Length: 222
Image 1 (cartoon, rainbow, N blue to C red):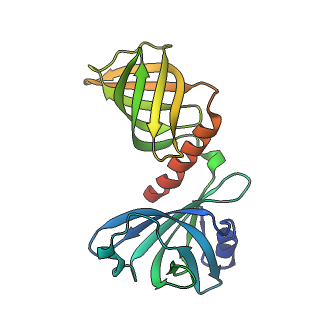
Image 2 (cartoon, rainbow, N blue to C red):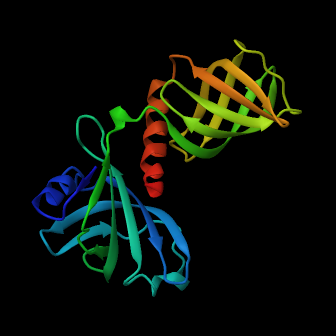
């Protein structure tokens, strides 16, 4: 849902706690896009938003191009249902004191997605399937709390419905691990194996964190 650029915008922004992690995407005039992480520092009503200077991915060659660049900011809110919030803004200036920050314009609209309403998110994430002591490269193409869909070379592995499968995934140091489950649907489509996995009940926290990460990043396609 979208919220008009008025008082409700600040109600939405207040859902992002000071210091909360932000996922940012900076679009430069030359077509270059940089993704990084930041954190919320604060904002002044009707004037600006302050976020921490990006902690990675920004080379010196692009630092002089930051002012006026378009920026997309995404975050998991502090609401009880873990809403996803996203907005598009522009970089007004770089602030160097007391710490290095980006000063952003206040967005005209804010987009929110309710995590509890999102059953499945489409993604494209590299993973490995561990099955019968073999480790096979795969592509994870959707993800939910209950399972995922993988595609892999049909010549690389063979699965039967009901078999135990382990999926190794590594996004960041914190978002890495093995998710176990069983194959509930196996289909060969022109040499590409589509394998639907139903997760077991273990590793709930990792599944929750991975799903939240994918959902936050999926807002770039909204």
